[in-house]
View 1 (cartoon, one colour):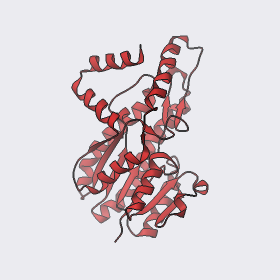
View 2 (cartoon, helix red, strand yellow):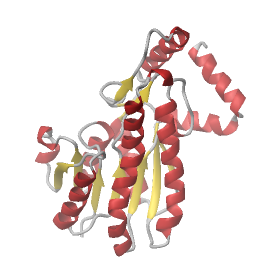
View 3 (cartoon, one colour):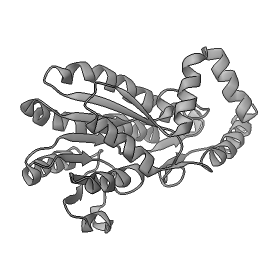
View 4 (cartoon, helix red, strand yellow):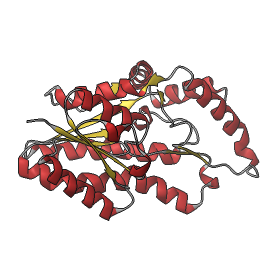
Length: 271
């Protein structure tokens, strides 16, 4: 019997690449997105079902999960991929933008996971793969909101792993580095208030560094391959890095104390 994967945020980037990768491996794919009517490539693939899911809309989550189960009988893997990055001086963010960042990257992830947990528990199996980031292990300036959400994803995932092991489930965390997706474009929410003069030097240096960081970004297919490994290796491994830069940065973070690592980041940015 074919296995089935349920993916959030499958319209572009990592989510779309993952849908195509698993389909090529013979899986059933439930590719969810906010605007499925705009999707043409995935909807033309065999055994791929494209449907609406907005992580901010609880009804759409429940409907997508229930209809996915009805369509394929069983869901084996959940990939919580939907999300975006809010960057900028904290003072410059309206409160609604702060709430939206956490609702999307954290509460939405929890709502989707919770919607699938009864199904996994009933089947005494199920793998939850949460897409974190190197930004869930290290931080860069002006990313208090984004890094806050990804650090939350790391803690949620690690703690939840104890729970789901009680019925035979698993939780996995995938931590990509710089990936050639629209993260630095459509999925990058940068907010700045130029009247806050004290922050403008660091704003300029971060924007320049971001462009450099994504110059040699790995393709999204690299992350899709790591997600496939996490879904199929049969191990209890919790964390997986994706991309050579991610491996280097996370290894350096493990070896350095806080002061040394932060000093290194500041030096790289010319702060």
